[in-house]
Length: 389
Image (cartoon, rainbow, N blue to C red; front, top):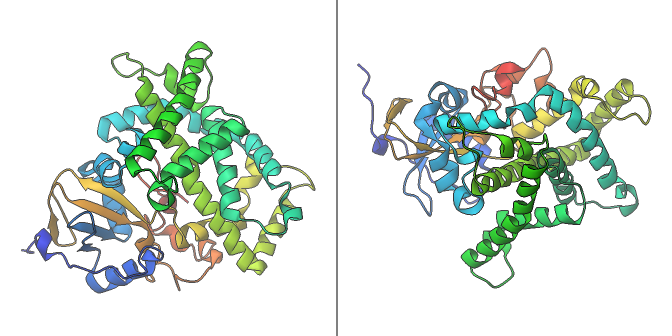
């Protein structure tokens, strides 16, 4: 009978100095040396367990997902509740499922058809001055575009000074621990930003109650829980905060990296442009059906996601003891399922450090290994792209 080890028996690794900027290759090497489970220590937590590889992703995201807590992971370990409130990202179990169902209608394919025209308009407006500017900060510009899209599609806010202020507030909150130049303490500055955000959002909620809309905020205002109760202002603001942060931050990162990678690999960029010329009439804006046929662009996007996932490691708290990889992990432990580690495994992705979008095209289709590509998760509500592509 196989002997199951304890937490102390899990191999310990020391993170290298460049870990924060390039975690994937290191975690993939540790996987090859120690297997799919190992641990380290951080400045703020004694033991953090890494679970690496497709089977680890499946274990956390699908087959044993109820043993893992978003609230203890994102909410407490990463301080999301303290910063943005208790929204969808920090809910577990039935509560998460119930609130997710409230939002589901806004993410159906029929709504995607409605979002694309506003995306085309915002992109056209935001990029109009790019040619004459000569040099463009693609990260800053991608943030403007993705936030404008999220603000209008999810909350019904139109591009302009008000949306710009929302974006500035969220960016200040995201980077508060890094570059606050106000001279105020972290808690004081955070409280100021939260108060301003509350004052901006509360009138929007009241407007939705008086004049219902069919954007996500409007749906949430009208929604009722299993007991017939409406969501409180605090719950609505927390959901809106998470929707706006998650709705633009990950897309900003991925879009900027995609543009950077295509600028560095001009041969493949030309193939993408040639594909679009073949699919679109000159000056025509893309339809949803046309976008679905842009396979070369899709492969480049998947490769950007693989090389530079917007979130390197998914945090979870352990609610129930479990065994994985020959080791016992007790409740109360914090774990990461490692997105960046899985995306750099050479046993799945050939020459993983190389930009090679053709790895996703037939006949190679390296992402066909279930739960190998999980930059945007995978589970019962959002199947892993690798297992559904």
